[in-house]
Structures are given as C-alpha cells and as structure tokens.
Image (cartoon, rainbow, N blue to C red; front, side, top):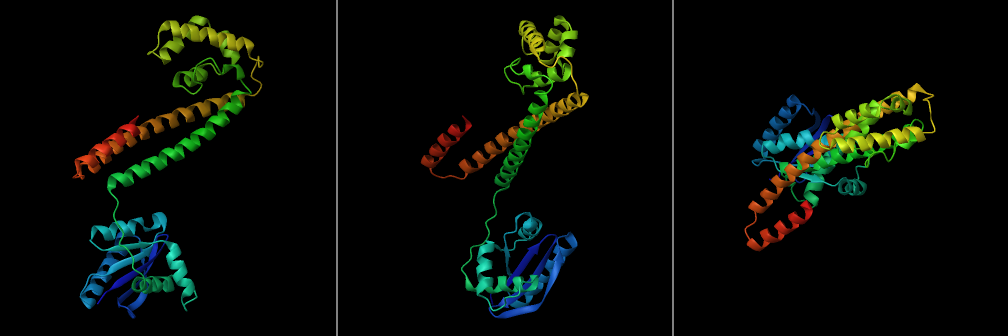
Length: 296
C-alpha cells in the first residue's frame, strides 16, 4: 500500500483526510486544531494509518505561508515525509475534478487524489541558519520602510519649525544631529543659549570628535538660528511632534544596527556550514571569493 494523508490548512486548524492507497479513502474527514493537543491527536491518527496500511503515510498539503509552520515543524520533528505543493497545482486539479464544491473536506480529499496522479517531490527542510537569515532580512526590510516614512514625516515638521537646521551637521540623521536638535528644537532655544553651552552639549553628545569640531558645529548652529525664518515657534504641537519623531528614528536606528549585526553573524555561520560541506577544493575557493565580494 501507499498511504497518504491530505491536510487542508487554514488559520489555526487543518482538515484531515487519509487514503490507504489509490482509490481507498480511510475513515471520515475531520478537523484538528494547531495546538499541542490537536497535533498530538493528528500523530495518533497517522499511527493508525500506518498500522492499517503497514507503511508510514506521506503528508500532502498546500503552501499557505505561516499558517502551515506549526504543523510542518511538529510533523518534521517526528520524521514524517512532507509534500508541500504550490496552490496553483491543486487549483488546476480542483478545476478538472468532478467535485466542484469547494469545502475543506473536499480539498483535503483532492490533495490525496493529487498525490496518486502527480509525481511530487518531498519537501526539503531548509537549514535553520538559512531560515533565520531570511527572517532577519525581512525584519530589516520592514523596519527600513517604516524608518523612511518616519524620516519624511520628521522633515515635514522640521520645515515648519527650523528649516535652516539642515546642513549644520553632515548627516541630518546622525545620532549627534538628532540629539542636538532634541536639546535645541527651535531657533529661540539656540539664540538664548550661549555658544559655550551649545559647544559643551555637542561635545558631550559626541565624545569621539574634538572640542574644536563641537565649537565649529555650535557656530554653524547659531548662524542657522539667525537665518531661520521662524523667529518664534507658532505651534507647540510641532515641537512635540519633532521630539516624538526624533525618538522614533533613534530607536529604529538602534534596531537596524542590531539586525545588521545579527545578519552578519548569521552570514558567517552559513558561509562556514556551506564551505565545510564542500568536498572539492576548487568549489571552496570559488565560493570563498564570492563571499569576499559580498562582504565588501
């Protein structure tokens, strides 16, 4: 016999249908929840299929993004062969089937029938390091997108409070620039403060640079405040928003820095794993050159 179990996966639960062999469905279709209790019951059922057929069943399911993750992980850990198919394949099979009604039970049944009709390759478990790297890069991409939007909102407020601030520091979004603006958010604050006070504050915020550099930055800041068309801040809400966006950007910068460190570390581990699994010296050398280029 060639047993198979079809899982129609949805959010938080799966519809289950088993076949002992082609054209031989086993028991009625049923649902299990994606909890320890539900998945444990599924494994018990799989063991029943194994006893009945004399062979451990294959598991077939559609790719459903993160909904399938707990099921795949749980069954992989227990040594079951998984076949994860593209939804387009099952959609075409459903279109050619006499069972036109779409229900979870019918879909699980069709997945089993598809197993016997098509030559399907088993799911290959991707390395933990590779999946970890993918998750890290996705997080980095998401936070980068949010950071860009926050910077645009920050600039819109800055234009209404202190447009001449741009250019005081080489990088408007450097830590010292944002923290200085947080301390002196309007031209009024800068004009009231002495050059010495501003110099000391800038040097305190960026101890890696000289006191001379801090003084030059303070002079630039004073000049920018003098040129600023907004002599007084009309809306206090702008100052509040400016401080809020500064804090958000600084937090995002910190998160991105941590993610970049994790990505670098994950890449090094992955590189070592790949190189250690290569037997040919020529392959190792060519991949080493590739990794060197990527690291530049």
